[in-house]
Each structure stands twice: as structure tokens, then as C-alpha cells.
Length: 378
Image 1 (cartoon, rainbow, N blue to C red):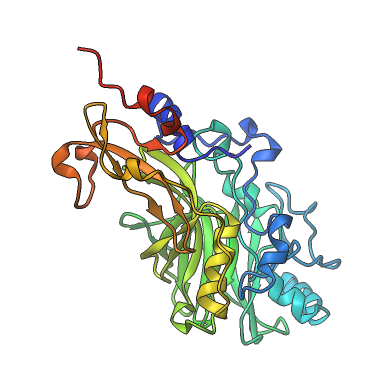
Image 2: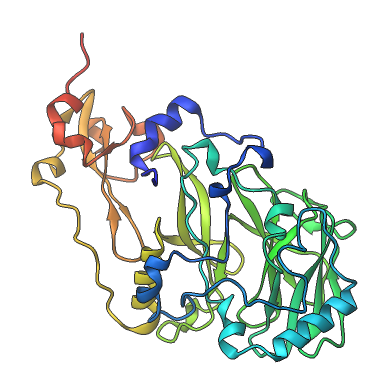
């Protein structure tokens, strides 16, 4: 069962939202963070949206190392041999297979940070779940990670497997980290994708207990740059209506919102360098609607808007102040109804944490308005 943002606020306040130790043994299989699968319920809706078509897991490659071979502490064949194996299988793959990976979406975690089982899996375990590779949009090159125990190295090869060169070795090459420069905290690399113009390669690496880190490496350089904290991402490359969006990223983020007094998981639109461009929403359906409207010109069908009684929008007295309606607006046209208790002087203007007289309140909670908004006892 998914944990709603507002419904779990008090749990966060009680338990704390800080980092927790990332211990693989403590995680049940159901908590796995997969960055290549899509909920089947979204398949029909996704079909009409570019760059997010539903995809099956990565194509099987019978002659390449299988998932069973890629267990933690496993070793891939030497890079030249691995490149030849991949090139042979790619030659036999259909266009749909080649495009399948790039058009997937990271699936929501179940549940979010308000449940301790939402910790991100260690990078070595994520790297072992699939053979990480990506084919350039011009179909002339492919990139892949060669895994050797807990270490992965990033390579680039021509589509026929020749002209192989190493792009990045996390044990020796420094990166522009979230703060400063240095070696990556984890040498396990996974989820490789090309930028929309094929001039850079994205990959992920383990970083925090609740989130992985996304990096961008310009081809020809050996120093990747931190982009954003994310537990999955996809590169937009086929947005016909708004081509300016091509190259942007859809990142599945574990984010902390001070006004919501909560940590939650949400799909966000960010630039190629990680600058926030807005929240798309917490579910894959939010992404589908956003891309349908932004990229295809098809007007998305929005779910029924929450019915908010007018009296709740007129700043009724509540607890130690007045009730202010300040919904969270998502890029797909939907919204999350949220109410705050603020002083009468804060009816307008940008809200800050210092203005709040109580934790945020959901629309459902306000069904019992008298109990929720009763003034505190003298």
C-alpha cells in the first residue's frame, strides 16, 4: 500500500526523516528499487506519449553475461570480449529492443521514506540486476559498464564492438561531487543512458541511504559531474510539440519539502544539468499526462479535481490562526490540496516554514473541521 504524502506527515515528525544506514540484508525483496520496469497498469496510457513508451525489461542477450551471472561480487568478461558479445547481440536485436530501455520509466518505490523499508538498495546490488548498457540515438555507438566485483568501469564502443575506449574508472578518476571534487563514494555504476545529443553519458552510483546519485560525463572528459539525487531517470529525446524539452530529464526523486514537513517520492522535470523545472507528480500517470500535453499536442484527460468547499478557501479561524489553502500544483495539471494554519497577516504572499502555526492539513482531515480546527485549551 502506498503511503500518501500528507497522510504520513505525523509519522515523519515522530520518527524523523534523516538518513538511515543502507543495509542490504535488512531489505526485503519487495523493496527493490528498479529503474527499468514500468507498472503494467500504465501501459495503455503510455503508448501515445513519446520517450515514455512502456518497455519490457532489457532484451535478453543469450551470449552475454546473464542476470544470474551478474551477482554481487561477480566479474564480467574482459572489456574487449564483453564489447564483442554486446555488439553481436545488438546486431541481432530489433529497433524496438534498442529503443526499449530509453523509453522506460523508473517505477515508484513502495512505500516512501515514511516506511523504513524504502531505503535504496546498495549500488552493487542494483548494478547486478541487469547488464547496464545504452545505445546512442544515432546508433553508431554504445556505452556499457564492465563490472568487476564491487567496481564498475564505463566504456564506449562502436556499434560493431570495435574502437573500444574506457571513459571512466571510479577508483582512479575524480568526479565533481555534490560537494567538492573527489572519488565517488561507491565504485558501483549502473543505469547508463546517452544524452539527447549523444555528447554525454549519464549513469548512477550509490550515494545516500535513501537515494542514489545521477552523474553526467561529457564524452572525451574523464570527470563526471553530479546532476541530482535520484532513484531512476529518463532522458527526453522525442518531444515534437516542445522540442526545448528534449535533453531534459524525468527524475524519480526522494525529496524533502519543508512546507509539507515530509519526505516523499515524486517524478520531477529537471534540466540536463539538474536544475529543477517543476514537479510532475507522484505517480507514473502524472508523467503520462504531462508528456501527452507537452509533447504530442494531445490534451490529457485529467482526473476529477478535488472538491474544496468555498468556506475552506475564505481563511476560516483554525487553531491558533486562520486556515490558508495552498495546493501543490503539478506539471500535468493536477494538484494536491494542502491547508496551513497561519497568522492572519500571512493570508497572501509566499509561505515559509516560520509562518506555519501547525503541521499541514489534508482535505480529508478537514471533513471533521470542528475537531481539527478547535482552538487549543486555555
